[in-house]
Length: 504
Image (cartoon, rainbow, N blue to C red; front, side, top):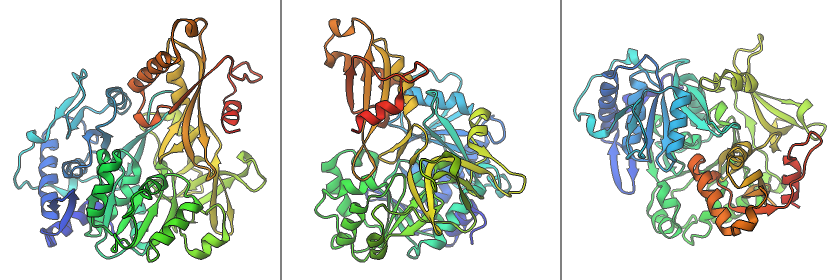
């Protein structure tokens, strides 16, 4: 049982400094490199004039320098906020406003924006060398370790605060309950701004394992992806189901070409039955785990190995048994069926709430006097069959698309700001496996717009506006223009009716 994540990683580095920790497309770094570079970052951060425990934004991709800077932050007593460098400038500004961060570590080049209120630190500002760090300064206990920003209904992202103890609960569970290989080599496909990446990052590092990176720009290019993937050597696959489905297009994606691949760990969206059946054929000797959990409960809180027996028993796969230190209850007052309701999670991996957002925190979190830990209202609908939990969708207007959590109301907020749009609704289009295959924008235009502009011109203008405020994965793939959108009894656009029509 691990007691301290930072100290455990440093212990491995001290005992075996030449062990490979990071492999970025063949460029490797050792645990010794990781300790030296993270200590150098910690030394630099400690020299900055910023308040104690003030969070630090980190802008970058999936390089070794990113991970060294994460550890540098927590060694100096500061939580880090990872922001993918393919994000737009507006997102960086909004995260700074919400978090009140005073520093950004620019691992990659920052977008051209006014950063007068921020200290910007580049890797070149951090000296190489041997620096001593004081473990008394390390993030510990209920201190925030990292903050992941997710989609928010009002157009502003929400910062989920994950403490050292939250992370510790998750990491110990993954290390103990998934029968992982010794010194596991994890695939790192998810960007670090997406909490699925944590399923690879810290279990690999506390297990004296290796992180094998498949960068975001490679995964966005099929030709590059299918040339790169067969060259990578890892034994634990971590991804969303939709990314693995994409890899079925690669003829070398099978056990013969990846003989070391022993484990598949899936999270972030519903795992289709058809996908597991295909994986069982392609990788007959690998274990396949389905997991479930919101960012607010630190990556995942349930797991089940999908065996041939489980496949044969269920058409729609279970999301697993609850981890030992956690309790899940079903609030049946919020369900469509008698035994279904909202999944409520209580346990040591549940966040203390959203950063600097007491209103949203009060809505999503609570603590009963009789309970030891915080509880989170997930917004997910589910039910138990014995001790096995099943997922049945959302009770609100949030969706998972390619693993990313998206508030449809955030997209609607930005659609409504466009000069051509009278009313706009983002609607998910589902496939037969109950996963979102497309986001459709259903739009009622202002009077006279159609007479002045072509649909192509209107769509381009709306897309450009959305790109300034939203992450790329949130922009609808289809735009449909309607004379009138359905209206509810209170005179507002009926979002549920629009979603129903899109899926008929």
